[in-house]
Each structure stands twice: as C-alpha cells, then as structure tokens.
Image 1 (cartoon, one colour):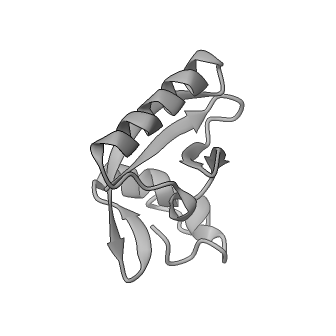
Image 2 (cartoon, helix red, strand yellow; image 1 turned 120 degrees about the horizontal axis):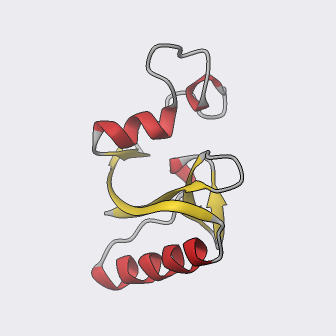
Image 3 (cartoon, one colour; image 1 turned 120 degrees about the vertical axis):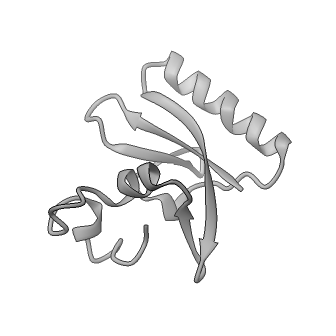
Length: 101
C-alpha cells in the first residue's frame, strides 16, 4: 500500500493527497492498493508540482496498524508526526492527531 506525500509550497508543511486535495494528516490520505492506483497518484503529484502547489512529491509505503494508516519508514513517520524532541509541537501535539503516526 502506498500514499502520495509532498510538502505544500506555501508553507512547507508535509501533506498527503486525499479526496482531490491535500490533507495535513496521513490518516486521511488516499491509499493506492495496486499499480494502477499508484500511477494515478503519481500523475496527480506531477500535476500539482507543475502547478507549484507542492514540492518533493513521493509515493511512500504505508501499513494499517490498529486501524490507522502509518508510514513504514522512520523518515516518513517523523514527517507525519513532527519533531522528535518536542512532542508538544508539530502534528503529534494536536488532540485530533494524537496516536496517529
């Protein structure tokens, strides 16, 4: 399973493609379950980058852990949650995101 991630050009925030737009939490991301869906997400990312909406567009591996979408790689877990030394900052500090990596 893969999701499309990028950084929003206007403020640098890590975002994930969801429902025709960009969500600030990985838990809302559209999940590609096959190659055709991956290709569709890659095309969406390329178009968004060309329109200067986002930069650093990538498909990343995710898993469903206890019913929640979680990035597989540590780098992506950090991008999804926020700073590792200040858990009172970033996305992990939000009650709506707590427990969602």
